[in-house]
Image 1 (cartoon, rainbow, N blue to C red):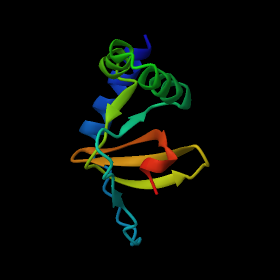
Image 2: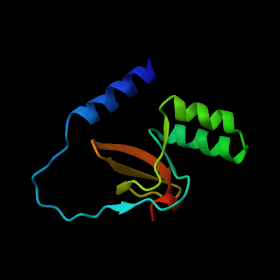
Image 3: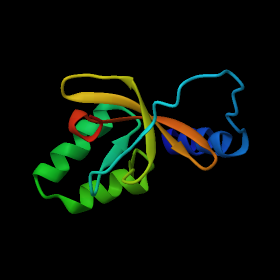
Image 4: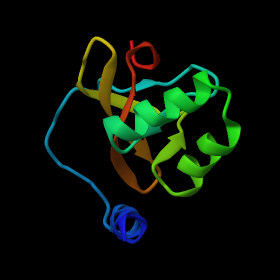
Length: 108
């Protein structure tokens, strides 16, 4: 069920453009860290980090294939909420954006 809801949300992001006509400064940056990963929740990010620390590749791949975590290297982003260990960012794609959690060192 969770995968279905995520798929619907991502489809909506792709279909509905997020064009805003408010004049704001462009404070976007680009993720430079090779292999950077963002997850849709802090708990999914914690699970991915634990899998990486344990060198559990299969667990990490499962989180990616289930749509809980994504590779985000090279993507533009803006910071939503900067934390000490975890930062919430908005990652921009060609078709919209999505809010993800990343380790704070990925989003300086």
